[in-house]
Length: 304
Image 1 (tube, rainbow, N blue to C red):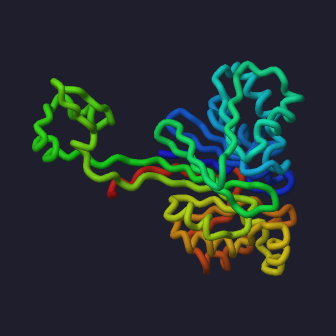
Image 2 (image 1 turned 45 degrees about the vertical axis):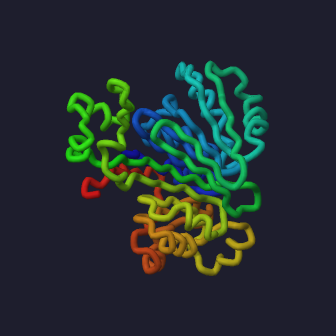
Image 3 (image 1 turned 180 degrees about the vertical axis):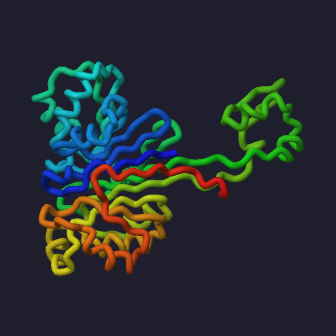
């Protein structure tokens, strides 16, 4: 399962009632943070989640509202006696940007590993969890992220018996082990049916809508997407600054056949996003206006 928390929902600047947009995902003892603007660690503490177990921080791009909270976050991690390495993923220039920000956080008790995204798309694997970065359309290099968790097929007793596999190996094969038995190599695919539907969550912000976004987030269980403006009259402003309106995000969700849509990265001038949701749901019924601390646990469908 994936525990997902939208820590903040504001774009451009934090507000007294809304922290900057960031996302935290927990899976099997590891945690992934996407974006770290000013105040992110406060939003995390308000939620009751800890920065100490964060294994990976992904950055969409290098605008201040998405990365300026990093020095404070690193110092908080260091003060919590963290010693495990921390992996960071982001556009080209990540190593230089992080080094610059670390001028005010120079001494840390853990190693930082920077992985700069190569090209328009790149996969990063962390155990069973795969994070796919893909380029979007903003006024600086910017990436969206898709997190996928695969699910193996059901154990097939008939296949196991037909292959003459001793029952003592069944459990180990089901768990993914490869076993040598008297010169014979036994593999999990010999006892498992077709892969079942896994879990998929996507996070996209600071971009115009593109066909590539729709393709990458297709069939996601949760699509978290920027909705900078809810006011219909600001459509041209969204185009000018390469952002999205609520309605463009809803069209993307509909086109990509996602299960649910959370809007985020609201303009500071947008005080009440909920006022615009009835019109949004006419385009995509499973849309919600994001709120700081909004949380969901995605679980495998036992009927699949």
